[in-house]
Image (cartoon, rainbow, N blue to C red; front, side, top):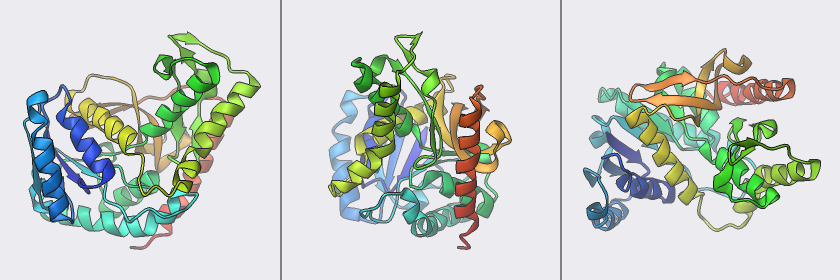
Amino acid sequence: MKVAIIGGAGGIGSSLAFNLLQSAHPFEVVIVDSRPNMILSHVMDLQDTLPLGRALGVSGGELADAADADAVVVCAAVPQTLNTDRSVFFADNAALVSGIVTELRERDWDGLLVMMTNPVDSLNTWLVRRFGLDPARVIGYSTNDTLRIRTGVGLALGVPSRSVEAWVLGEHGAGQVPLLDRVRVDGAPVTLSPEERAAVLDYIDNWYVRHVALESGRASTWSSGLGGARLLEALATGTGETLTGSVVLDGQYGVAGVSRGVPLRLGPEGVREVIEWDLAAAELEAMVASAARVDALASGYAG
């Protein structure tokens, strides 16, 4: 699979490139960015990792070099500033992403679009509407929420997070819907105490705010890079693994026409299946309520 990473010289893009090159699947990676020297710096470095993996190659390029890519990953974004909600970046990032998609379509590109730019749910929703894209071929990255709940549960219970199975659906951000009644440890169902639930919710609800407040100038590069690579592996191989991703729904979970983080099965053609789990009434209400927020943001932008 040929993967073009737009914004590939940034933290998330370069982390994604590294993880793809070390994947068991033989990816060909093209790094596209507005900073030629940064592209060259990353490519020179990444080329020396090729003997340690199975990748077909890594190169730098321009947007034109993405025209024949099987998957285009968009990581490009305006600079992150101190904030408490990813939605503040919507208008500026929508304008940026719109230009990328417009040029790709002018070059007859017809591959998969993986959105890693935030706010991912609103951007996916707007792009599918604006360009008439096939919703099954536009997948937003939202796996970090599920990774964080597993970390939070592990900390609350004092167990390794790798032994935890837990999920977050809904919006990547303020409208996330943690499934606290679907937690398993080493495959066995676990009932969290009120104190444990509160600790988990504090961890996942405030992770972003605490991280941005550090003013480190960096995003969640390592988790996003590895999680994004796993999503692309699932697209390339079609193994049937259940992953979370943000896609525009068609009535599932009571939502239509809005992108939501949901459990998916993926393959080379895109979304093979949106898996519908039985949710509690409060969880379904939260899915619908946060969809209305995303819909309003996407509908209010006329760019």
